[in-house]
Each structure stands twice: as C-alpha cells, then as structure tokens.
Length: 187
Image (cartoon, rainbow, N blue to C red):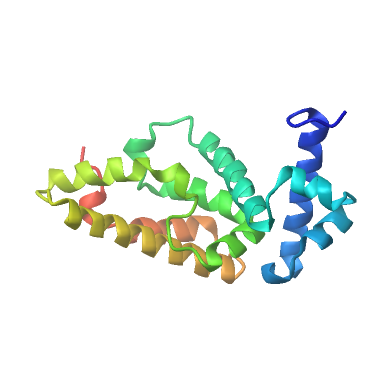
C-alpha cells in the first residue's frame, strides 16, 4: 500500500518533482499545469494532490529539499567564520547551477533571500559584525542585511537568467568583492 512516507510514496513524489524540473527547462512556469505533471509522471491527479496542495506547494517542498542538500555541503566547516568567503559563495553557486532550472523560476519573483528558511542565521552573523564597528541601531543593521540580501539575490537572478554564462569561481569572486567591508570578519 502506498501510504504517506513509505518508499513508494517518496519515489512517486520524487518522480513528480523530476517531471516538474524537466518541464521547467523548456516551458514557462505559468504554463505548467498539474495535468501536464501527472501525464508525464504517469500518475493520477489524486496522487498529485495527496502529495501537494498545488504547484506552488510543490515548489516550496522542492526548495526545502534543495535547501537541505545545500546545507549538507556546508557541514564540514565553521560556517560563521567563512560565511562571506569566496569558498562559501562557491559552494552556494555550484548548488544553484546544478539546479538552475528550479532557481530560474524561483528567483523570478523573489523578494527575500534565496532559500529563506536556511538563512535565519545570517542576521546572527551580520548583527555582531555591525556592532563590532559601532553600528548598534537595529534599523541601521537591517539596512545592511537588506542590502546584502537584495544584491545577492539579483546577482543570482541575472546569473541564472543568462544561463550561468560566467563560471561559479568568477561569480564567487565578484560577490565576495561586493560584500561591505564591515561584514568581513577580522582575525
């Protein structure tokens, strides 16, 4: 029996998500329908709705899965000490490029940091660094946070919109050079 969280259920969900990613390669997101996903994944609509509320819920779950994959790549280091390093950006960019069709759609209307749930800790890194240089007002610190978030997000959007034309290493260096000096940890 195909019950929630058994292997067959998980495999079916992965198959539908794979179909969604495949469709995203050549079709505008707005034109992707539950019907098209079901046809290509060879499942009934009721199966789709047993897994997802709608296509947007599917995107959210895919983002959660990809976020978990990305965070695993950071487990080998002290993320606070190198969060704004070229290496840190390189890991992120390699992940984005690997899943560029998903992120191309995901970044189209992005108004918050990519993989938003995975970066709550970013505030906990930016705030102390601002305080180290004498910026204590929460509103001022918020502007540094927003500036980094918006610049980084739009940089990623442009990169995936141009089919990741420049290398991950080149873009990681550009991003690192754009990080405000006050956010760079001094040793």
